[in-house]
Image (cartoon, rainbow, N blue to C red):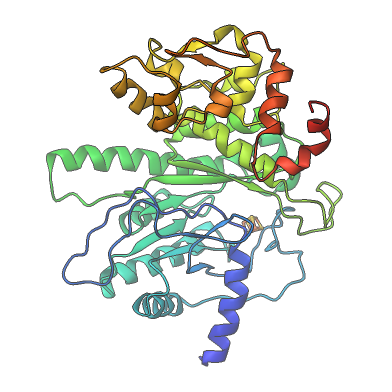
Length: 420
Ligand code: SF4
Protein backbone atom coordinates (compact mmCIF):
# COMPACT_ATOMS: atom_id res chain seq x y z
CA UNK A 1 0.00 0.00 0.00
CA UNK A 2 1.49 3.34 -1.02
CA UNK A 3 2.11 6.11 1.44
CA UNK A 4 -0.24 8.35 -0.60
CA UNK A 5 -3.13 5.88 -0.24
CA UNK A 6 -2.60 5.58 3.54
CA UNK A 7 -2.56 9.37 3.75
CA UNK A 8 -5.79 9.57 1.80
CA UNK A 9 -7.44 7.00 4.07
CA UNK A 10 -6.21 8.89 7.10
CA UNK A 11 -7.74 12.11 5.79
CA UNK A 12 -11.10 10.48 5.19
CA UNK A 13 -11.27 8.41 8.38
CA UNK A 14 -9.91 11.06 10.75
CA UNK A 15 -12.36 13.59 9.34
CA UNK A 16 -15.28 11.17 9.81
CA UNK A 17 -14.24 10.59 13.45
CA UNK A 18 -14.32 14.24 14.44
CA UNK A 19 -18.03 14.19 15.33
CA UNK A 20 -17.36 11.91 18.28
CA UNK A 21 -16.50 13.95 21.37
CA UNK A 22 -16.27 11.12 23.86
CA UNK A 23 -12.50 10.89 23.83
CA UNK A 24 -11.13 12.30 27.08
CA UNK A 25 -8.58 9.93 28.53
CA UNK A 26 -8.78 10.63 32.23
CA UNK A 27 -8.94 7.95 34.83
CA UNK A 28 -6.53 5.34 33.54
CA UNK A 29 -3.17 4.42 34.94
CA UNK A 30 -1.53 1.73 32.85
CA UNK A 31 2.16 1.55 33.67
CA UNK A 32 4.92 0.68 31.28
CA UNK A 33 5.84 -2.99 31.48
CA UNK A 34 8.71 -4.95 29.97
CA UNK A 35 10.34 -1.82 28.57
CA UNK A 36 7.37 -1.47 26.24
CA UNK A 37 6.20 1.55 24.34
CA UNK A 38 4.50 4.36 26.16
CA UNK A 39 2.82 5.15 29.39
CA UNK A 40 -0.84 5.88 29.64
CA UNK A 41 -0.88 9.58 30.37
CA UNK A 42 -3.61 9.30 33.03
CA UNK A 43 -5.50 12.31 34.34
CA UNK A 44 -6.77 13.56 31.02
CA UNK A 45 -3.58 14.65 29.25
CA UNK A 46 -4.19 12.48 26.22
CA UNK A 47 -6.67 14.78 24.53
CA UNK A 48 -6.71 18.17 22.95
CA UNK A 49 -9.38 20.66 21.94
CA UNK A 50 -10.27 22.00 18.54
CA UNK A 51 -11.20 25.62 17.98
CA UNK A 52 -14.88 24.99 18.62
CA UNK A 53 -14.11 23.36 21.95
CA UNK A 54 -14.41 19.72 20.90
CA UNK A 55 -12.14 17.18 22.45
CA UNK A 56 -9.99 15.30 19.95
CA UNK A 57 -7.33 12.66 20.32
CA UNK A 58 -4.32 13.09 18.16
CA UNK A 59 -4.95 9.72 16.54
CA UNK A 60 -8.70 9.60 16.46
CA UNK A 61 -9.92 7.57 13.53
CA UNK A 62 -12.58 5.26 12.20
CA UNK A 63 -11.63 1.77 11.08
CA UNK A 64 -14.02 2.42 8.18
CA UNK A 65 -16.69 4.88 7.15
CA UNK A 66 -18.63 2.20 5.26
CA UNK A 67 -21.81 1.44 7.17
CA UNK A 68 -24.79 -0.82 6.71
CA UNK A 69 -27.00 1.54 8.72
CA UNK A 70 -28.65 4.78 7.77
CA UNK A 71 -28.90 6.84 10.96
CA UNK A 72 -30.24 10.22 9.85
CA UNK A 73 -27.89 12.30 12.05
CA UNK A 74 -24.67 10.58 10.90
CA UNK A 75 -22.34 11.66 8.14
CA UNK A 76 -21.31 8.02 7.65
CA UNK A 77 -24.85 6.73 7.00
CA UNK A 78 -25.10 4.47 3.96
CA UNK A 79 -27.28 6.82 1.92
CA UNK A 80 -24.78 9.67 2.14
CA UNK A 81 -22.78 10.20 -1.03
CA UNK A 82 -19.26 10.53 0.39
CA UNK A 83 -15.82 9.10 -0.27
CA UNK A 84 -15.43 5.81 1.60
CA UNK A 85 -12.34 4.08 2.93
CA UNK A 86 -11.34 1.28 5.28
CA UNK A 87 -8.14 0.58 7.16
CA UNK A 88 -6.67 -2.88 7.46
CA UNK A 89 -5.92 -3.99 11.00
CA UNK A 90 -2.16 -3.82 10.49
CA UNK A 91 -2.40 -0.32 8.99
CA UNK A 92 -3.98 1.06 12.16
CA UNK A 93 -1.36 -0.71 14.29
CA UNK A 94 1.49 0.70 12.17
CA UNK A 95 0.04 4.22 12.16
CA UNK A 96 -0.39 4.18 15.95
CA UNK A 97 3.16 2.98 16.56
CA UNK A 98 4.68 5.36 14.02
CA UNK A 99 2.79 8.36 15.37
CA UNK A 100 3.61 7.35 18.90
CA UNK A 101 7.33 7.02 18.19
CA UNK A 102 7.29 10.50 16.66
CA UNK A 103 5.60 11.86 19.77
CA UNK A 104 2.53 12.96 17.79
CA UNK A 105 0.12 11.01 19.97
CA UNK A 106 -0.18 9.43 23.36
CA UNK A 107 -2.89 6.96 22.51
CA UNK A 108 -5.50 5.71 20.09
CA UNK A 109 -9.21 6.44 19.82
CA UNK A 110 -10.71 3.91 17.44
CA UNK A 111 -14.31 3.83 16.28
CA UNK A 112 -15.97 2.46 13.16
CA UNK A 113 -18.92 2.36 10.84
CA UNK A 114 -20.49 -1.08 10.77
CA UNK A 115 -18.98 -3.25 8.02
CA UNK A 116 -21.12 -6.39 7.69
CA UNK A 117 -22.51 -6.79 11.14
CA UNK A 118 -21.71 -5.77 14.70
CA UNK A 119 -19.48 -8.74 15.56
CA UNK A 120 -17.42 -8.63 12.37
CA UNK A 121 -16.68 -4.95 13.04
CA UNK A 122 -16.02 -5.34 16.75
CA UNK A 123 -13.63 -8.22 16.05
CA UNK A 124 -11.49 -5.89 13.93
CA UNK A 125 -11.37 -3.19 16.60
CA UNK A 126 -10.39 -5.75 19.21
CA UNK A 127 -7.74 -7.19 16.88
CA UNK A 128 -6.06 -3.77 16.59
CA UNK A 129 -5.95 -3.32 20.36
CA UNK A 130 -4.72 -6.90 20.89
CA UNK A 131 -1.91 -6.52 18.37
CA UNK A 132 -0.85 -3.22 19.91
CA UNK A 133 -0.72 -4.68 23.41
CA UNK A 134 0.61 -8.14 22.69
CA UNK A 135 2.81 -7.77 19.62
CA UNK A 136 3.95 -4.16 19.92
CA UNK A 137 4.02 -4.07 23.72
CA UNK A 138 2.16 -0.74 23.53
CA UNK A 139 1.22 0.68 26.94
CA UNK A 140 -0.34 3.94 25.74
CA UNK A 141 -4.00 4.79 26.12
CA UNK A 142 -6.56 2.95 24.00
CA UNK A 143 -10.20 3.96 23.75
CA UNK A 144 -12.35 1.57 21.71
CA UNK A 145 -15.89 2.20 20.63
CA UNK A 146 -18.17 -0.71 21.37
CA UNK A 147 -20.26 -1.54 18.35
CA UNK A 148 -23.97 -1.69 19.28
CA UNK A 149 -25.09 -5.31 19.15
CA UNK A 150 -21.58 -6.82 19.60
CA UNK A 151 -21.47 -10.14 21.44
CA UNK A 152 -20.68 -10.50 25.13
CA UNK A 153 -17.52 -12.45 24.34
CA UNK A 154 -16.10 -9.65 22.16
CA UNK A 155 -17.01 -7.04 24.78
CA UNK A 156 -15.19 -9.08 27.39
CA UNK A 157 -12.10 -9.31 25.20
CA UNK A 158 -12.22 -5.60 24.28
CA UNK A 159 -12.03 -4.55 27.92
CA UNK A 160 -8.87 -6.59 28.47
CA UNK A 161 -6.95 -4.51 25.90
CA UNK A 162 -8.67 -1.10 26.03
CA UNK A 163 -8.45 1.49 28.79
CA UNK A 164 -11.87 2.82 28.03
CA UNK A 165 -14.91 1.48 26.16
CA UNK A 166 -17.88 3.46 24.99
CA UNK A 167 -21.15 2.93 23.20
CA UNK A 168 -22.66 6.15 21.93
CA UNK A 169 -26.36 6.26 22.67
CA UNK A 170 -26.46 9.32 20.35
CA UNK A 171 -30.17 10.09 20.61
CA UNK A 172 -31.14 10.78 24.24
CA UNK A 173 -34.60 9.17 24.12
CA UNK A 174 -35.97 5.87 22.83
CA UNK A 175 -38.61 7.72 20.77
CA UNK A 176 -35.91 9.91 19.15
CA UNK A 177 -33.87 6.81 18.34
CA UNK A 178 -36.88 5.19 16.65
CA UNK A 179 -37.40 8.30 14.57
CA UNK A 180 -33.82 8.84 13.42
CA UNK A 181 -32.29 5.36 13.51
CA UNK A 182 -35.23 2.99 12.94
CA UNK A 183 -32.89 0.06 12.09
CA UNK A 184 -31.37 0.10 15.55
CA UNK A 185 -32.71 -1.39 18.77
CA UNK A 186 -32.33 0.34 22.08
CA UNK A 187 -31.14 -2.98 23.56
CA UNK A 188 -28.24 -3.08 21.08
CA UNK A 189 -26.80 -0.15 23.02
CA UNK A 190 -27.69 -1.16 26.54
CA UNK A 191 -26.60 -4.81 26.28
CA UNK A 192 -22.88 -4.06 25.72
CA UNK A 193 -23.06 -1.29 28.35
CA UNK A 194 -24.43 -3.76 30.87
CA UNK A 195 -21.79 -6.33 29.95
CA UNK A 196 -18.99 -3.79 30.45
CA UNK A 197 -20.43 -2.63 33.77
CA UNK A 198 -20.68 -6.20 35.07
CA UNK A 199 -17.19 -7.15 33.85
CA UNK A 200 -15.66 -4.09 35.53
CA UNK A 201 -17.32 -5.03 38.83
CA UNK A 202 -16.30 -8.67 38.52
CA UNK A 203 -12.66 -8.04 37.55
CA UNK A 204 -12.26 -5.51 40.36
CA UNK A 205 -13.65 -7.99 42.88
CA UNK A 206 -11.38 -10.78 41.60
CA UNK A 207 -8.33 -8.51 41.69
CA UNK A 208 -8.86 -7.96 45.40
CA UNK A 209 -8.45 -11.70 45.92
CA UNK A 210 -6.01 -12.64 43.12
CA UNK A 211 -3.49 -9.86 42.51
CA UNK A 212 -2.55 -11.15 39.03
CA UNK A 213 -6.09 -10.66 37.66
CA UNK A 214 -5.78 -8.34 34.64
CA UNK A 215 -7.40 -4.92 34.61
CA UNK A 216 -10.64 -4.63 32.68
CA UNK A 217 -11.34 -1.25 31.04
CA UNK A 218 -9.59 0.60 33.89
CA UNK A 219 -10.82 4.01 32.69
CA UNK A 220 -14.41 2.75 32.67
CA UNK A 221 -17.05 3.37 30.03
CA UNK A 222 -18.59 6.48 28.57
CA UNK A 223 -21.31 7.47 26.14
CA UNK A 224 -22.24 10.43 24.01
CA UNK A 225 -25.57 12.11 23.26
CA UNK A 226 -26.23 14.39 20.34
CA UNK A 227 -27.93 17.59 21.45
CA UNK A 228 -30.43 19.51 19.35
CA UNK A 229 -31.02 16.94 16.58
CA UNK A 230 -34.46 16.12 17.93
CA UNK A 231 -36.88 17.99 20.16
CA UNK A 232 -35.79 16.65 23.56
CA UNK A 233 -35.88 19.11 26.45
CA UNK A 234 -32.88 19.60 28.72
CA UNK A 235 -34.90 17.70 31.32
CA UNK A 236 -35.19 14.68 28.97
CA UNK A 237 -31.46 14.81 28.29
CA UNK A 238 -30.32 15.10 31.90
CA UNK A 239 -32.78 12.47 33.16
CA UNK A 240 -31.43 10.17 30.49
CA UNK A 241 -27.81 10.96 31.47
CA UNK A 242 -28.64 10.31 35.13
CA UNK A 243 -30.08 6.93 34.12
CA UNK A 244 -26.82 5.96 32.39
CA UNK A 245 -24.62 7.15 35.27
CA UNK A 246 -26.71 5.23 37.79
CA UNK A 247 -27.55 2.02 35.96
CA UNK A 248 -24.45 1.52 33.82
CA UNK A 249 -21.81 3.20 36.04
CA UNK A 250 -20.78 5.60 33.26
CA UNK A 251 -17.57 7.43 33.96
CA UNK A 252 -18.69 10.25 31.68
CA UNK A 253 -21.64 11.22 29.55
CA UNK A 254 -20.65 13.59 26.75
CA UNK A 255 -23.03 16.09 25.16
CA UNK A 256 -22.35 16.98 21.56
CA UNK A 257 -24.21 19.85 19.87
CA UNK A 258 -25.66 18.54 16.60
CA UNK A 259 -23.71 19.63 13.54
CA UNK A 260 -26.18 19.49 10.61
CA UNK A 261 -24.76 17.07 8.06
CA UNK A 262 -27.83 16.10 6.06
CA UNK A 263 -30.90 17.55 4.39
CA UNK A 264 -33.64 15.67 6.21
CA UNK A 265 -36.98 17.08 7.27
CA UNK A 266 -36.66 15.29 10.64
CA UNK A 267 -33.50 17.30 11.45
CA UNK A 268 -32.37 20.95 11.74
CA UNK A 269 -31.48 22.33 8.29
CA UNK A 270 -27.89 22.44 7.07
CA UNK A 271 -26.38 25.74 8.17
CA UNK A 272 -28.35 25.82 11.46
CA UNK A 273 -26.25 26.96 14.36
CA UNK A 274 -24.57 24.27 16.48
CA UNK A 275 -26.03 24.71 20.01
CA UNK A 276 -22.69 25.26 21.75
CA UNK A 277 -24.08 27.33 24.63
CA UNK A 278 -26.70 24.65 25.35
CA UNK A 279 -23.95 22.02 25.27
CA UNK A 280 -21.99 24.09 27.78
CA UNK A 281 -24.98 24.47 30.14
CA UNK A 282 -25.59 20.70 30.02
CA UNK A 283 -21.97 20.03 30.99
CA UNK A 284 -22.35 22.49 33.91
CA UNK A 285 -25.50 20.67 35.03
CA UNK A 286 -23.75 17.30 34.72
CA UNK A 287 -20.97 18.67 36.96
CA UNK A 288 -23.47 19.86 39.59
CA UNK A 289 -25.09 16.42 39.68
CA UNK A 290 -21.80 14.54 39.97
CA UNK A 291 -19.84 16.76 42.33
CA UNK A 292 -22.10 19.31 44.05
CA UNK A 293 -24.80 17.09 45.50
CA UNK A 294 -27.65 18.39 43.35
CA UNK A 295 -30.48 16.10 42.32
CA UNK A 296 -31.57 16.44 38.70
CA UNK A 297 -35.16 17.31 39.67
CA UNK A 298 -33.95 20.35 41.62
CA UNK A 299 -32.54 21.85 38.42
CA UNK A 300 -34.89 20.46 35.76
CA UNK A 301 -38.51 19.51 36.34
CA UNK A 302 -42.00 19.94 34.92
CA UNK A 303 -41.98 23.66 35.78
CA UNK A 304 -38.45 24.24 34.40
CA UNK A 305 -37.88 21.70 31.60
CA UNK A 306 -35.07 23.73 30.02
CA UNK A 307 -31.98 25.42 31.39
CA UNK A 308 -31.72 29.18 31.55
CA UNK A 309 -29.22 30.10 28.82
CA UNK A 310 -28.48 33.49 30.46
CA UNK A 311 -26.89 32.12 33.61
CA UNK A 312 -25.20 28.92 34.74
CA UNK A 313 -27.50 26.27 36.27
CA UNK A 314 -26.29 26.79 39.85
CA UNK A 315 -27.04 30.50 39.71
CA UNK A 316 -30.36 29.69 38.01
CA UNK A 317 -31.28 27.32 40.84
CA UNK A 318 -30.28 29.87 43.51
CA UNK A 319 -32.37 32.62 41.89
CA UNK A 320 -35.42 30.34 41.93
CA UNK A 321 -34.78 29.33 45.54
CA UNK A 322 -33.97 32.56 47.34
CA UNK A 323 -35.63 31.21 50.51
CA UNK A 324 -32.40 29.19 51.12
CA UNK A 325 -30.31 32.38 51.21
CA UNK A 326 -28.39 34.18 52.59
CA UNK A 327 -26.14 31.36 53.80
CA UNK A 328 -23.79 32.10 56.69
CA UNK A 329 -20.37 30.91 55.48
CA UNK A 330 -19.12 30.64 59.07
CA UNK A 331 -21.81 28.14 60.04
CA UNK A 332 -23.22 26.40 56.97
CA UNK A 333 -22.45 22.76 56.25
CA UNK A 334 -20.42 21.62 53.25
CA UNK A 335 -23.52 20.81 51.14
CA UNK A 336 -25.03 24.27 51.57
CA UNK A 337 -21.72 26.08 51.00
CA UNK A 338 -21.44 24.23 47.69
CA UNK A 339 -24.77 25.70 46.60
CA UNK A 340 -23.69 29.33 46.87
CA UNK A 341 -23.13 30.71 43.35
CA UNK A 342 -19.50 31.73 42.90
CA UNK A 343 -18.15 29.13 45.33
CA UNK A 344 -16.58 26.01 43.82
CA UNK A 345 -15.75 22.78 45.64
CA UNK A 346 -12.11 23.78 46.16
CA UNK A 347 -13.24 26.98 47.85
CA UNK A 348 -15.66 24.98 50.00
CA UNK A 349 -12.71 22.91 51.33
CA UNK A 350 -10.69 26.07 51.94
CA UNK A 351 -13.56 27.76 53.81
CA UNK A 352 -14.07 24.74 56.05
CA UNK A 353 -10.38 24.61 56.89
CA UNK A 354 -9.97 28.35 57.37
CA UNK A 355 -12.97 28.80 59.67
CA UNK A 356 -11.46 26.37 62.19
CA UNK A 357 -9.08 29.22 63.09
CA UNK A 358 -11.12 32.39 62.69
CA UNK A 359 -14.44 33.83 61.66
CA UNK A 360 -14.24 34.66 57.98
CA UNK A 361 -14.96 38.11 56.58
CA UNK A 362 -15.06 39.54 53.02
CA UNK A 363 -11.29 39.98 52.97
CA UNK A 364 -10.64 36.36 53.94
CA UNK A 365 -13.13 35.13 51.34
CA UNK A 366 -11.54 37.29 48.68
CA UNK A 367 -8.13 35.79 49.51
CA UNK A 368 -9.58 32.29 49.29
CA UNK A 369 -10.54 33.12 45.70
CA UNK A 370 -14.31 33.26 45.89
CA UNK A 371 -16.12 35.04 43.04
CA UNK A 372 -17.64 37.64 45.37
CA UNK A 373 -19.27 39.51 42.50
CA UNK A 374 -21.88 36.73 42.41
CA UNK A 375 -21.52 35.10 45.84
CA UNK A 376 -22.21 38.36 47.71
CA UNK A 377 -25.93 38.21 46.90
CA UNK A 378 -26.30 34.79 48.52
CA UNK A 379 -24.16 34.78 51.69
CA UNK A 380 -23.27 36.54 54.93
CA UNK A 381 -19.97 36.43 56.78
CA UNK A 382 -18.21 38.27 59.59
CA UNK A 383 -18.70 41.62 57.94
CA UNK A 384 -21.68 43.68 58.93
CA UNK A 385 -23.22 44.44 55.58
CA UNK A 386 -25.04 42.40 53.04
CA UNK A 387 -25.94 45.30 50.86
CA UNK A 388 -28.43 43.70 48.54
CA UNK A 389 -30.56 41.79 50.99
CA UNK A 390 -33.85 43.08 49.55
CA UNK A 391 -33.15 42.67 45.85
CA UNK A 392 -35.53 40.66 43.70
CA UNK A 393 -34.05 37.66 41.81
CA UNK A 394 -34.43 39.38 38.42
CA UNK A 395 -32.54 42.41 39.69
CA UNK A 396 -29.74 40.21 41.08
CA UNK A 397 -29.54 38.36 37.76
CA UNK A 398 -29.30 41.65 35.87
CA UNK A 399 -26.56 42.98 38.14
CA UNK A 400 -24.54 39.78 37.85
CA UNK A 401 -24.88 39.70 34.05
CA UNK A 402 -23.93 43.35 33.85
CA UNK A 403 -20.65 42.65 35.59
CA UNK A 404 -20.00 39.36 33.89
CA UNK A 405 -17.26 38.91 31.32
CA UNK A 406 -18.36 35.40 30.23
CA UNK A 407 -17.78 34.46 26.61
CA UNK A 408 -21.50 34.22 25.90
CA UNK A 409 -22.40 37.54 27.55
CA UNK A 410 -22.65 39.46 24.28
CA UNK A 411 -25.66 37.35 23.32
CA UNK A 412 -27.59 38.95 26.15
CA UNK A 413 -26.74 42.57 25.54
CA UNK A 414 -30.39 43.39 24.83
CA UNK A 415 -31.51 41.95 28.13
CA UNK A 416 -28.69 43.70 29.98
CA UNK A 417 -29.93 47.05 28.77
CA UNK A 418 -33.08 46.50 30.81
CA UNK A 419 -31.00 46.58 33.98
CA UNK A 420 -28.71 49.49 33.27
S1 SF4 B 1 -24.40 2.84 12.83
FE1 SF4 B 1 -22.98 4.40 13.56
S2 SF4 B 1 -21.66 4.85 11.82
FE2 SF4 B 1 -23.42 3.74 11.01
S3 SF4 B 1 -24.84 5.34 10.35
FE3 SF4 B 1 -25.41 4.79 12.46
S4 SF4 B 1 -24.28 6.23 13.76
FE4 SF4 B 1 -23.34 6.28 11.70
